[in-house]
Length: 332
Ligand code: A2P
Image 1 (tube, rainbow, N blue to C red):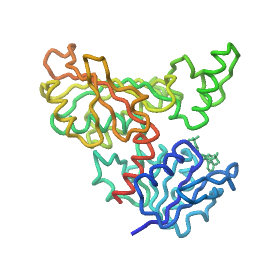
Image 2: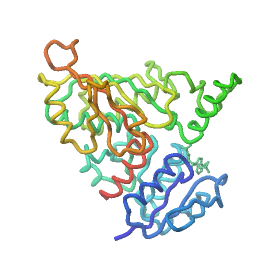
Image 3: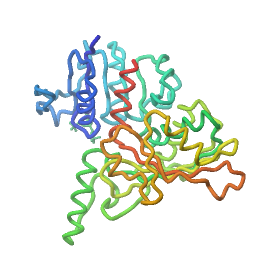
Image 4: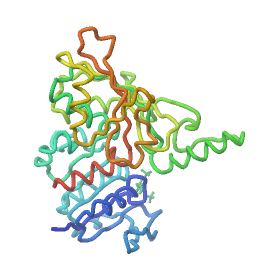
């Protein structure tokens, strides 16, 4: 079996990673169509021994296509994913457009692969910070249900796309040269700075990224009762997000138990060397498939022994987006 596949948003940061991962994993492609805006139409992109030409996406782009990997922004997905599904495609959508729809599965393959079966043409890929948290928390939750999660993120420029990554590099150069620099993609200078995630802040004071981490995790885990609070910020890192995760379990749990569970968990690599103070770092997570987990310790503020602190880093473009979507396609 091989699949007539299209990438919507092929020229973006996640689109480029789709191309890399499809080749690395030898995904069975019958054909591959690259779709983006009119800005990129005609652009040539190398793929293996071939050169593929980017096409402007239209309503007709999906005729004869079976699988769409989509990452061109929420508005584009809202418009084109239903058109593609009506044309008979299965769309694995990387945007937030359909994630919370009751009849759209929201899937992390290591967590809820069985949910894929209920799809009606669209499967949503979760938010990158959600995926990076869910992969290591799920195996712990299965053993000892998590009652509460307090997570703080350290999010890379890559989450805001290829243009934001270029802006971080430009801004850093300008800062070091003493030149003035006005950001256009992100709301504040990214270089040598930290700021609240660049999504809108809701009436409850949470930004949209924080709300996604809460609601998506509850949906993916099928556990609306888990209490979750998040603080999401951008840090001057090019790609790979990090997260400080504080967990409160139902029963007491030891560091040793956490290490044992995580060392057997799919998609997780433990990086936890106290002697060398070597823990997960975004530079080490860059281009890695696994979520790095370390700095695992008992939370001394929970004297009942039910609390654990840990620090994770995961490649936002890879496991946080393109790899997770390709894994969903492989399960299909
Ligand atoms: P284009 O390069 O033609 O603008 P990123 O997340 O890295 O910013 O990438 C966004 C992706 O979404 C790019 O491939 C971009 O294509 C694509 N895209 C943005 N706007 C549109 C649009 N109106 N129609 C189709 N693709 C779009």
